Image (tube, rainbow, N blue to C red; front, side):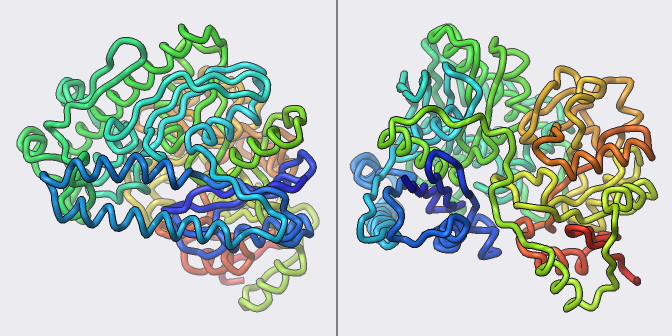
Length: 563
């Protein structure tokens, strides 16, 4: 049976394909269209998935989509109607938008169907939950999904057992942790719904001076509940960038929002630290309730907020679970996988799929395409017999290397297929990368990749972290060895690498260890700020030529600037 899942639509649209009980392909639309956070119908992603399996639209038995439009309208329209007296123009415009958006969404999803395809509109948060639990190593687990908003629910809590997932309770709009963090992102001068990771990085520089203020704004309640004091917000009736998310009362307490190009001040760092702390406290409150209620020893996380690696690290240490699993595409793009998995089990009755241990499910471009792109570019290049040794030598000499290998990663993290790599032992490497390659804010940290069996030597409590979704403390004795990946608070967002999951990347780590003494590399995504991670060899060449990357390794080919 061939089952296609569709994730996202308002943003981060994606497709995933399951054929005969195997995940064949998964990719976000942005990687193919080159438009960051691309929304709409993911036609290019669907085309890739079908091509990967040698299928036509008529060969698809079922398509699962990321939300139920009828439920969304049934919840959102009455709520917006109730807010007409407070914000008549916005509320009326929003209701019109909802009607148009849902009609376009339904029409777009139908356009993907072949003659014999059955179309299913999936419940947003249970599909999030399925995307994590059904590829986890756990037969039974508590599940927590935290998002901006689905049809109406913002936080979902449940339990999975075998192939069944059961809802325990939900929190609905406007009590959204995702909106809270997105609102802080905009307040601090970044782009909401895309730059939240900047706030997470900035938080490490600050002190939680305003934590008590945010605890008044966002408070835990008994029974695994929480509530907002919306006296400080205006997203329940007038959200968005035109008027902002926060009320005058909030601005009076914390000061004016930061404009995009204004300097980051100590006040901004402390606000970020305070908001991050309170988010973590609420997440811990929810996770501990799940632990007590379900008796489960393991936890699966999903939803866009599950990309908050600092929160995840604290849950791992303090929530009382033995293990936590998050699949690499935790946001709305990942619903493509969850929807396909739900339909697979519903219509085949088949057993659980194997644990997802790697994310290499995207496009791959072969040697001929790589050679053609390099030759067309005019770059001086050569084919190297031991590319891992050559790349390790370049890295050990202090060069920044673009690393392009195999199938592209599923999810927002570069995990050794579309990566920019550097020597983590050099104190100046972080600033060099931010200034010359990534063209981004100087406070942004970089992450390490490490051979899995060696991770406990360098990172406290880290045994396995294949998708770079948890922050771990760098051991005090290792911080001097690894200054370029040790954040200001002494932590790092770790990716562990197993030889069976990515043999070439693993060999590179070992070759680098032979030269510099550590099986660790600085690993950041192969892109510059504002662009998606590279997909084709041509994308990689363009990024290489337009940035301060010193060398480009694609397959067995090596190119360096200036010959």
